View (cartoon, rainbow, N blue to C red):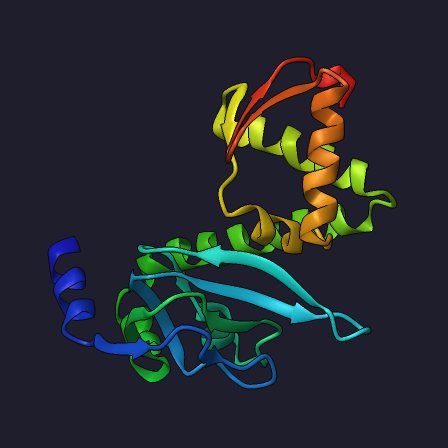
Length: 201
């Protein structure tokens, strides 16, 4: 049964390419379907009331997006832009609905994907609601320790991209990391960070 579903989905996919910095989905439109990244990276972002970009997430090969709007018919709340030259597989909304109606056991997988995205958004919102840059960076580092299940953690993205996800300027993010290192809480090695004493964060 699973082979049949997989073959049905693969037969419905088309390949789409986007150049770096081009818009994939607008934040004020319905998603035309589900996108799966084959190669490259994309970023989900919003603009705050001051017009400043807030990066919500970086999608990489194997990640999908657009499914929530395609399923519930609500407008996208996030803009998705190619962060590099991007190759996508695209499943049109109508075909996605047909497959889900034919194979309802796929619904839990789709719902898990949507819930995972909502959990991630809540983390981002919690981070930017913290008053100080030090608090935002500290909370982010603690979360990485939990997610990566190690005190030797690695930044999931480039420093300037992480900074934007935390609502900080890149130079502010670098300065706070240096301050935390000087306090003896961490040891920096480019994108790799050794947690020394979490209580000093």
